[in-house]
Length: 394
Ligand code: PHB
Image (tube, rainbow, N blue to C red; front, side):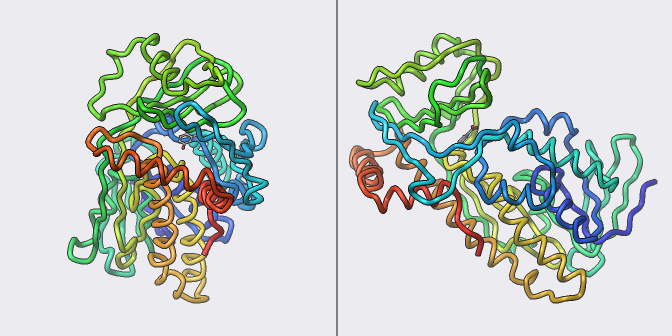
C-alpha cells in the first residue's frame, strides 16, 4: 500500500492544488496531491476563461511552461453593452494592464504536465478521502487509490484545495468558523458553439430580457452565456431558440449580429457567493473554492484561487524551512482581504448587469444608475478596469 511521509498533503488537483504543489517543489518542499476526479474529468470541465495579468505572471515565474502565450489570447478590453449600446473599456489606457483569455481546463492540463515532470506523486480518481489530527503537527490524509489500494499520507500540513464540495472545509469545527453566503435568483445558460468570434473583445450585455455574455475560446469555438432561471432544463431549448434569445439580448441600433453555428455543449451554471472564515484551522489550510465561491460574472474564481496560493506558498515554505511561521499564521487574514474585494466586484457586476425577477422597479432603475455612474466617469471606468484586471497583491 502506498504510504508517504511528506511536507504537505494537498487535497485537490485542480489549478489551486497543482499550482501550490509546483511552487512548493520549486523551493524543495515535498507534497503529495490527490483528487477524487480523474485527470480527464478535470480536463473536460468547462469553467471561466479569463486570467488576470498577475495569474499569467505567476504561471510564467513558476516555470509552468503554460501554453497561455501560444494558445491563449491577450485581451486589452471588454465591451459593456446597455440596452443595445456598447461602451468600450481599454485596459492598458485605463490601468496599464491586460487580461488573457485561456480556459481554466487548459491551465489544469499545463499544470498536471508540469507536476508529472517533477516525478512527484499525484493520485487521481481516489475514493474515501478522510483526514484527521488537523489540530496536531502530524495530520494525515487517507484515501483509496483508483487501483483499490489504501493510500496513507502523513504530513506536516494539509491544504484543502478540494473545491466547494470537498471534505476539507467540513473538518474545521463549526464553532470556530463562519460561513457567509448569498444566493441569486438566477443562473447562467452556457453554450459552446462552432462559430467564428462575433467581436474582438468579450461583450457583457445588460438588456431588458436579462444578461448575456459573448465570450470566446478560439478562432472556431466560442463560449456564450445568458441569464436564465436556476431550474432551466437545457434539453428543452433548441439551437434556434438559444440563438434567438442570445441575439435578442445584444440587439441594438448599431445592428450588431452574432455569428452563429452548431451548439456543441449546453449547461446551466449555478450562481452563489460564499466565504468561509478563517481559511485555516490547526495544520489545515483552505485555498480556492473550498473556502470561497464567486458568481462567474467577474471571472474571478481561478484568479482568486491563484491569489490564495501566492500567499500560502511562501508562507508554507518559510514555516517548513524554519525561517518564520508568522506569514502562515496570518494567511487567512491576508487572503480574505482580497477574497472580499473579489466578492464585492463579482456581486456588483452581477447586480449591475442582470435583471432580477424578484426585484422591484426601484432596484432595476437604481442598478442602472450604478452602472451609468461607472460608464460615464473616467474614475469609474478606471475602477472597473482595476477590479477586472486584478489588484496588486497585499
Ligand atoms: C468564459 O469565457 O467562460 C467567461 C469569461 C468571462 C466571464 C465569465 C466566463 O466573466
